[in-house]
Length: 192
Image (tube, rainbow, N blue to C red; front, side, top):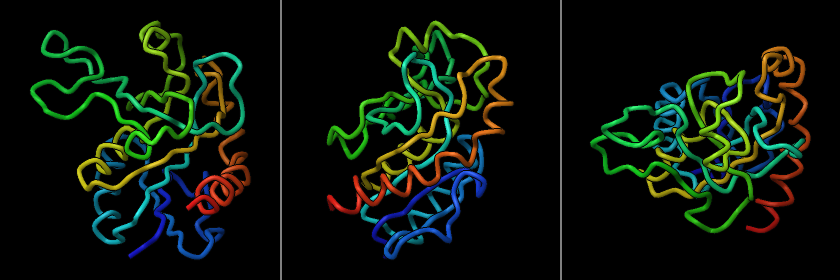
């Protein structure tokens, strides 16, 4: 049994060798399908008391920068209208969003997860209060809900989700690692 399981998409985002005792790091790959599979396997193999996701993200809300903790995640690219509203999987009992720590009130940013790299303004994201966008967290939160494991997430803002997002992401992908390890020690491990 692992105390804390850290899930991240890529080794370029986070080096597993830096994990402190009691923390296991697993890489889940990019996108919701890869992440759902990897998370399910990791949960069954490690049986953690807490999952922490760390990853990079694009910024939608003005004024944000650096490392943010996510309070809620929604699925931004499930578009099966008119069977269900955007963000909701049709003909499913699954929720269209998830809150960190089983609604324990961690973080203050809302993340929109989808299998696309956001490079242009999407009014729906703004209307739904999305602060940042990624490609993995909704899948992690969904798997954690199935296994009844609480989760928390920290995202490092690498870009402004615009035409230059791919260049800025490439330049900044590894820039948040120190901030994350510090936050894990201060906000998660020190507080139990």
